[in-house]
Image (cartoon, rainbow, N blue to C red; front, side, top):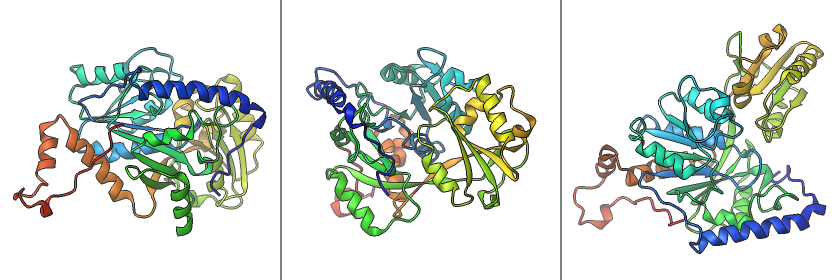
Length: 390
């Protein structure tokens, strides 16, 4: 059920109050204009959350990239968490996870035709992307995990909320996992409840919609995880999840914030799952590789080791993995799927926003081509996408 992954450490609530006071003052300074948010001529779409831990940001960013990259020039700007470089870095085909971070590395490998850049200073990163000769043809910038980075004023602010960790049940850090008070959701233009179960009753959609208490200017969507075929890291062919049987022993190797949903989904194929869990963005070391080898060697046959795409970015090429592990290790690619038939509406909002606000004359013409010739007949005018001024 929703909220079932939330754990509140009540003895830390006094510290949460202090944390909330500091965050509240910061947000108020932005609301009063004392701290400034910059708007940009290039369309900016921010995708993030207000909780610590995974809410499915990367597959949602990748979904938006898929909708846009064959129509316009897309750039993804991330902080590049736990990279070993500093400042602005534009990814190339030779960039490594150490250079740009595991999630940007994953996106660059999937979408070679987009710009992927990292910079902790998002305003500076946007300036580089829009002014440099190499990247100034950028039509839209996707900000990955920038909901709290209020120095940028995005045209569309997308807030992701994990179905299993709804913000209405959570508490501020350190007692809970909220980065800022629940009222922070009011800055969002689009709210997406992610990682929903495959089967949700109509009543549950209505209850969640009412519980979130969104404003009329905010649109609520629901998505679930969709798993593709298992892909070998080193040897072998792709295989469907359906090849897993009740007798298959799975070692689930993860270094992500919230692997519980993945465990729940794999449990529908087999009950023999051994979690091998590391911290989010974990940098695998020699002792970790030894542990992986030992756990898998002790696992009964038939067996397989499954990891995530993000972990693959840090695992691939690591020395010391046993031949047995290399022959049986697969990554499980994840996509998202909209529920309630909301996909077309979401796509229209995103594509329409970019076309309406693009500096690119071709994209602007594509927008104008859809307008009726007789502009004096208001009944024939298509509705335009309008987001409130954040």
